[in-house]
Length: 281
Image (cartoon, rainbow, N blue to C red; front, side):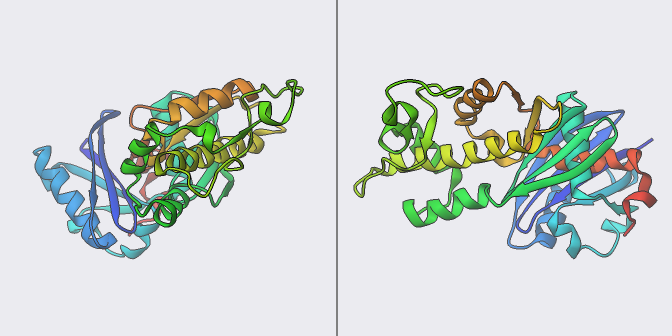
């Protein structure tokens, strides 16, 4: 049994992993000007870095928006496509070891996938995500480098940006502690520092995602949420999501390979659905 390669093809960034004997090996990501260049660059680098020959590859599984541009087998290897929402669910379940949860895939926007054992269904999403953070940062901070924004935010003071319950009420409201955000950016002034703005932008995006995920769970017994995608790597996640856990009495989980879960899930889909069920190229 050879290695199964899972590839999450974005418009400019491609993530790739290999799975053999139910183990993930050395995931990598490559950024290029277009999805084709990104895909083949990532594939070649992955084989080279891991000393893998083409004959060692059993199957290639593609997913992501960029996969639509691929209509032929990769280097002549058996190649299939995995539905992105199924890949999200399979990868998050595999990495978190939780099979009853809502998977929160934080990409350009954010999607919610209900994972209940082998039943994985897209249940909605919001247009707030990494694209929102990048776009607002471009307008307000003159950069769309998320890592730079995250570093700036570490030096910011959120009290200069957000309005808390304690700012508008002399007493805690039912279920709402005094430090709960009442309104994002309501305290912001025209001369706010870039560091404060960065802190406000990241908190607003992450809080919006976390609260929307909780709202998506209402009417179910789901209490666990698995965060995947690039935004899950933001250091501010360790500040924002614990606050939401206390507020809503829920649990957020960030798996080890959270940014690669979709690629991992694509590889797993080869065994889960089989190449025909996944849609051969």
